[in-house]
Amino acid sequence: MKRFLSWIAICSLSVSSSAAPSRKTSAKAGPVCARCIEAHEDFLASDALGGRGSATHDELVAAEYIASELEQYGIEPAAGENGDPSAGKLGEYIQRVELRNAESLIGPKHIIPSISTRNVLGVIPGSDPKLNSEIVLLSAHLDHLGTRPEKAFNGDAIYNGADDDASGTTAVLELARTLAEGPKPKRTVLFALFGSEELGGYGDEYFLEHLGFPLQRIVANLEFEMIGRPDAAVAPHTLWLTGWERTNLGPELAKHGARLVGDPHPEHKFFSRSDNYDLALKGVIAQTVSSYGLHKQYHKPDDDIAHLDLAHMTEAIGSMIEPVRWLVNSDFRPQWAPGGRPQ
Image (cartoon, rainbow, N blue to C red):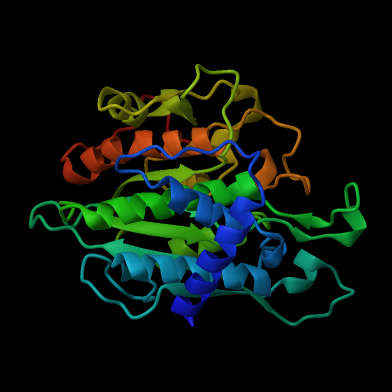
């Protein structure tokens, strides 16, 4: 079923790509795969997925697609509830999360006793006997706002979420592909695509409650959120990192080639508005990579593929490949700055 979904996606993408020649795209050669990035966006942000609403069947289809891609790359499944991600195969990619307070989440008119969201988890076990117990977590959220006829905009009721957060999901998939193709990382790399972030972070909360290993093994978490368009508040070809001043992770990644600067919008408190925050509250160095420029399509039906800058997105992801590769092969352990850890 997973391979079948990927095949459908690839076939449909070639059609949709040719139908949208006005999109800014790039055929840049090198370690980053521009066609892969465009293909992921074309499927995940398509009308066919109905906006990937949190805890819906459309979210499940997105999760199956992501699991299929990880399987194709040779990434091991890591959704075993009591599993150790440095041990190898754990049986499943998709972690089912039952949300018991469904009525309070989606309203009493549905009277549904329970609904489920899904996380997708994959792992590359570390190759170094001294470093493989340390985990670098690369994450994004796979859900968005779904289809909302009561909140249609210009006749469009599908909230595609091309930037929020199909772009982050695509970044994690591309980093997974590149890391799987190269030499095995020394540290263990865990890939997590969380469900129901838009409902309040239920996917990442469940993930943290069912780790199956000590949380302290996660040395760093990079969340990817809304990188599909450049931010005019920073220099061209640049990404920003939430909580830049809170840790030494951002400056160290920048030393190794990451085009990262501090968040230019501190008044919006983006550090506490992504899945990274739940990890940070527990002491993990967890920060979000973004280039969200406060565009008008945020949480609107026209956050769609036509508004993406795929050339920027391809370059942004490509710029993170070698810095992330350095991080997963390094013995560098990022630290909180004095007063930087959230309370």
